[in-house]
Length: 419
Image (cartoon, rainbow, N blue to C red; front, side, top):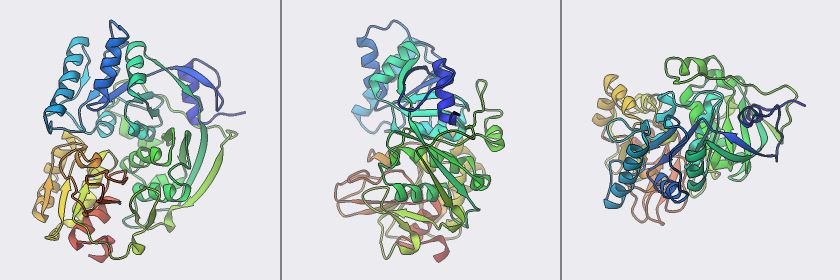
């Protein structure tokens, strides 16, 4: 019996010839990640167990990105804990203001994650790195502490679900729309503790940015991880970035899946997730008359240079509606610079957008765009739970960058074709 790509990576890191779903295994990790919310908790646990050193100072990444720049005293104290820990244990990959970015955009761009890796992070969207053909998943801060000390963790091998995506996406349809469609199809618990494997010729037309977005939102369907088998585009992305050797895995033809789903991507249109769950999706053509107060383009889901190019394509020569606040947040400092060099930042600001330093900010209701009671936002973020971006009586609608940009101009949720 063959193995899936997820099972092969887990087996390799467990030192076993094969693993099967449901099996409990100890695995070595290639990278351990923490941010300004979760790392301080892990650091306290690390100190409590009496560990004298980290397992590898090159294989731990600390990224204060949620409240960056520090929004208040508490945020500053959180980062202070991280900074002191990094200095005390010689952590190489500590990224603060000036060199930081949103963690799940930053680490792949820095080449710290490559195909075949096993990565755990004290953040649920660590599953993003499956876009490179890596196994990556979120864990708790105590798991992070143990991994920082030992370089190991335990995992129950997940069952796999296969999503065969075929056809060429139509104009304005992106990886975000495909994933919102899938979440709407199977529900927010439809892949609970399962590996979501995405294949098919539709990926011939999808950028790495699309792929990162898809795997990022596997957790929104309850997935343990999302993963896309690496191809030439993956190799091209890693070339010149990778800080260590990578291994390309692929599922066997006789691999066993819990379920297999076929999706014709060419039939999709831009999708919108209505409050208050990512599964509450409908095509933008069926959105109705929904006015908005704010639009956010950015986050670990859609803050890459490709996303900013799409938003600029929609907004260039237009003006943001006077009743709408448009906030644009690039994923990293490098993306910020690239947006300046390409004239994207200038075009977006001229259209009426506020351009931010990289930060998670409003995505989790942290800062840089909190909603008041009764306000509505359309955002390229990944969650729209009650109170996610501010007041419990506010509403968040999820979309791709093109729809968010067009809606900022129209003052209501619309397709880019409408403007």
